Length: 463
Image 1: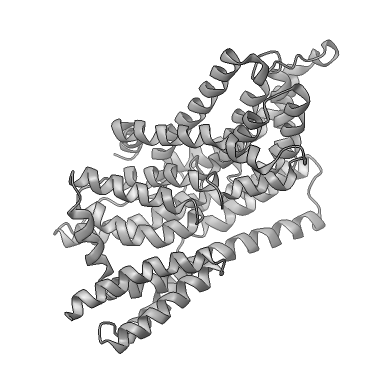
Image 2 (image 1 turned 30 degrees about the vertical axis):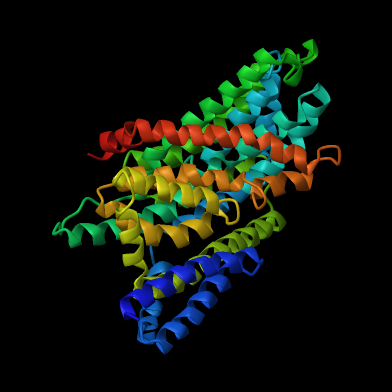
């Protein structure tokens, strides 16, 4: 058999094999690296893979660990965990619930607003879903909300941190797309390509994030109008109306100031994401100190949690590096290029296929697993076909937000299931997220039809 064809067959089989291994429940990082090593040995046996390629791993790992952009990841995680412990989420939820309580669907609207604010100030999906599940779900249940609407809006709003900056997913995506775009442009003879910065990706994600917030809110309003019993009003007692505006100001101003300090400095070009993340971490600690929620014991828990989350993400990235080397060196990149280039519809067909594959993988894998496996394989082909890297990164981010919502492995569903009362069944949670997953697909269609919704703000700020 032709060695080139054999290598491509092994690469395609390896891709399917690693998905099968992950579905069996093996740890992600070791599944990626282990499967790649096994197929590398098979490829070596057949003469289509050279093990000396592993020699590049040390340099790649050192590059990842010393990458100044990726230093922002543990800092943003630290900021999010500190804010989660500071009680900001609880105060926001309680205050916004009172503010919108006189409206039908007001509690659900307050959950969406708080979800967006927490996404822009913390970005920690698990903590956001758990906090809103503990506080808002009992309140909506007591008010007579349809359990499907209540659980769906909590899960969907809690995942906004995946697309609204500062998102750790966008940080990794920006770093990966920057390197891939540089390679693609140099292969075309452009030795001074425009860099793909994390700041530009953040700017591109703002309008799509607000679009999702608007779609969620419009759906809640639609339900409140067409089925008032599913989203009743919860009027605030007269005794609690006094001083309500002061409560709103106290609850809103601290996170808004933090958002302006962090995102504003990045978008204005005053600070890099890493510098802004360090400022945000200090600001989060100051807020926690003001609320008297920060002592040595809490700080120790925050540091341990930050280290656990960061190490989990980076070890997946290290395992994905092994997978990427074996896949590319056995001809997998050529296989993907030929497959996508031959799609009916040209570039549009290739984009639809990649987005569909990522959406389907979201049912069985989480966001980081998908981007570390799929982006290095497909992005070079799409960028070669002329796709804008900022547009691609944001589209992938919106697409992969659904991986938190789609069963059987949607993590937001698990987070909420862990804190929901027994009366709220798993089936109820699964049915509740269906309209919101459909809204995210609608958002993808809108962004595809109107790409300027992604590219306009980065061009205005950075050109």
